[in-house]
Amino acid sequence: MTISMIGWVATCVFAVSYFFREASALRKIQAVAACLWIIYGVAIGAVPVVVANLIVAGAALYSSLRPRQARNGQPTVRIQEQTLPVVVAPGAEERESGIA
Image (cartoon, rainbow, N blue to C red):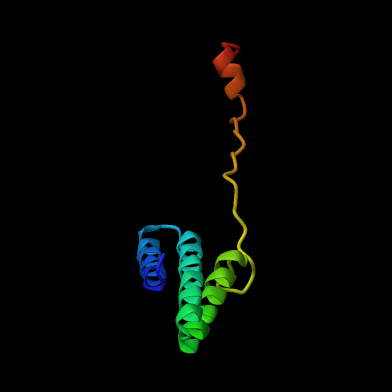
């Protein structure tokens, strides 16, 4: 694989990341692309490419791995669907059974 191919693969991986609907998946794929860009930057000796993509990869990994925060700063908790108790009106059991 030539050095320029690494850059093209990084570009394709980054572009593909936008087809993921889940934000954390998008960020993880972008982190992979940034790592490819880092390899490419090292291979061509481009320090700005390496530094910029170190920042991008770090931010993408951090934001996809940390717990999501609510607006008030508290970690969000996934709420499981709760079943509501069945409330029976007084005397309903007697009416259904035919006892009056």
